[in-house]
Length: 187
Image (cartoon, rainbow, N blue to C red; front, side):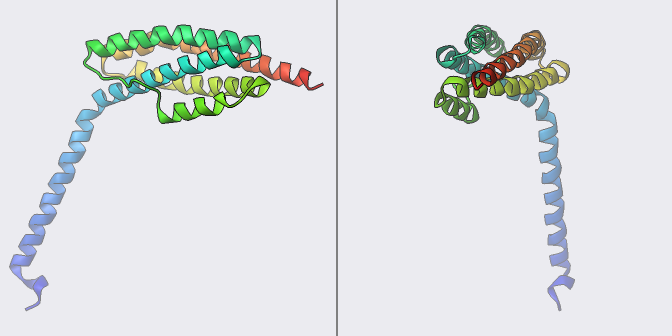
């Protein structure tokens, strides 16, 4: 008798397939039910890490920037993001969330790259990074402010969003100032 025709084999195969299907459904259900809180927590983690990065990069810009717009923007980043970081720490503490204590590996790499630059090369790279970073931040904060499930985290995102939008506008102005000063310096 061939083993595929054996009733025990077919029964065991059916049981294994049934158990695999149940495991798949349970895993999918767990992911679906855990995602709202996880999404808020992920947002808070990224916001904390990004905020710390903005402070470090702002300190670097205030120190290394040659264009006054870069220095001023860097100082604003230190001030505004230090304040936002403190607010987020308070929200996290009240909601039993654990935030990172340092910047992400990606942000550390950006800092490392920028710290090796100087003069107008630094100014241009910093301005470009700030525009890109704030565009991404605004998208994430807008999403959290509309779809967040944790009221405190959602409120933090909503409250911080106008400041980030102001930062983006200022970063674009800084970028124009840097580009115009570097193009006139090259003449």
